[in-house]
Amino acid sequence: MLDSLKVTVLAEDSVPYESPLLGQHGVSFWLEATAANERRRILVDVGQNPDALLYNIGKLNIPLAQTDAVVLTHCHYDHTQGLAQILRAIGKRDVPVIAHPSLFRPNFITAPFFRHVGVMQGDEPADVHAAGGCLFPVVGPMQLMPGLTTTGEVPRVSDFEEVGIALSTIDANGRVVPDTMPDDIAIEARVKGCGTVIVTGCSHAGIVNILKHSVRPGERVAGIIGGLHLVEASEERIAKTVAAMSEFSPSLVAAGHCTGFRAQAAIYAAFGDRFATMGSGTVFSFTA
Image (cartoon, rainbow, N blue to C red; front, top):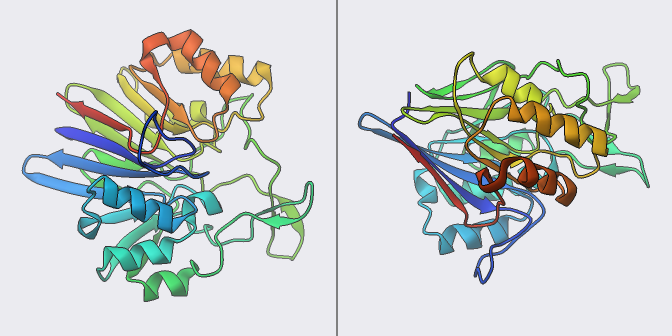
């Protein structure tokens, strides 16, 4: 298990009151994990505006050059755009970039008009390698260090969760088919004396599915941090999600980005001071 975990929000849709930082539609997290005498720094997602992200990184005095790995939670542009630029700013060779093998597939919406929303030009595999990244395409969990791992593909077991947006892709036969976002992954961190912390980009797999997949029987949930993609969800789905999350008794639910105001209000009503908003520069610390 980890001795401590510090999660800094580098980019988010909002900024705290009187903050000098920049907001953008998207998220990026900086994780500092310690175990024994080991400290590792993980960049999770990069938002969609690398200039704004680098501005915040500078203001927050984040040691970007000490990045040990990059994790991409899914393909969408508001989590991956500018990846190559960020890798160049890290300034190292062979920086592990961990993501699902399908990350670079076509991913698009067709309403109100066709628009590609996946990984953009300039951040494709050749660009990643040229910028110093080393891709690790993995379907299952990937241990970053003892106590810190990616979820891998998340089984869809709940009967009320869905991707949250009508997305399409192109199959091996050239046909347009629904995209169920199999690449949606999250981070699991197990901290001594605290419990399990989940860091998620958008929860296209469903936050309840993620919790059921990641939390072991009897484990305490110390925190859920990230986007829950309930912004366009029905009131029924929001109610069911909040009820199912309550069964895990999380000590913290920091829900932002694509969660949506209605869902945030419902989570706050259910969890009270265990609910927190996210914003660029927000820090969450977990230690025994």
